Image (cartoon, rainbow, N blue to C red; front, top):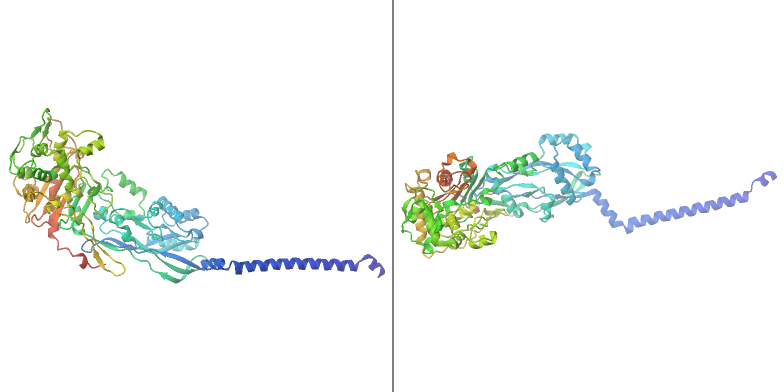
Length: 627
């Protein structure tokens, strides 16, 4: 025992043990203190923050897009509808590698490069916890394929919704327009709060003009989700407000009749109600299928459209700028009467050409042999160029410009459709400002017969015909007739906006030019008698026109249009209104490279007016049943 005590120091060991115990206890106390401090910080100081995070993991706020308003014609025929559809969405924060996910998804459903580009644009503008569509309007087969493989795609889901559809298709494409996917540029031009959860926005036509009415306001709902983000139950809902439905002045049957009447020709037809300014039909041909654009048009289809030499995306009714030709002669005749440059019954000799003093250049009549002695009425229905050449020398370009502008030529009509062009009603000031050149007398001769620098759009010519029909009274052309409040279902009509009246010194002058236009179709020697005036059971006033595309040499005889290459033929134009004493419709027709205004454009106008008269009386907006 004594030896063991000498070898082992029990007191020292006991002291070391106590020291270690104290150190371990101190370290433990410090660690417990740190733990208590951290728990206190998390549970008390940061309680609100982590409570919110916890709730966010359990609840999600989902945006509910509004139902887009429908578009109807004046009789309740649907022009733009909503159909059920399925869309594929990705929640970015729930997907580790979006590009890899898209690559795998593309093996199940078709995902184009355009879909990826649009998706990336939307992701950059959308909170990462919200679903962003990658594909719209999936087919039933694609939905089934995804459902089989759903477990391989966390953060990807299919949602039921609505997609836009246009029942009239090509017939009303330029009028109604179309919706397309929202781009970053679109979002920069609108209130993005209204477009949370929306996939479409108006791109053209009525869809674009009245986007703010059609779109509506989004709602929201709070849902409980599991760890994968899958919705378990709905906790709260704020319903979206649907967009307003629109009723147009357009008559769908007349729109279809006008489209068919143009046949295979490139051109435009505009029909207007002279009493209100409401457009009854507005057609541009060739056209396109607006449904192609709704869910994103493919590069192949888009390249076909933009490379087509006939330019189907070009709205000829509003954007096409063409010389109006002889369709403006009634307005020029009215200017001559009002400025005392000529009297209606004065006869003028028409040998088939005219020369200006000091020049041997011949300004020829369309009829090379001339029309002989003609007064104003005959000059209109025989369309004597020489009569109006001589009148222009008395009128002067300033009066020609002034009276043309009174009828809206060379100006926007202000129609509630996008991208309208104004054309040109030339004047001295216009030429000096645009070309820094003086005005020459020969240019006055060209202008008075609707050639030279002068260009108009088909809708301007329809407005001009309407103003003549109503003896200088009229309303701004428009397509919106009424709208429906989505909350109470009330239909509110629009109020037509009156144009500045054309006041004449002598109102009898209206009758002079209208009588001339009546004889265009009813007099045996009228330019449109054989093509338009046969078997009429109503009164019709019209005026033909041919807009020259290619010039002729001084001594070159006028060729037969059938022998001229299509692209070198004159544009064919015709304006008309009926019935004469109580006009209900005014029409303007343009056929690109059609040749004769009377023989080509005239019969189209007649078909449109006949179709209008054969229909039942249109319903009032207030009596239109909502669908």
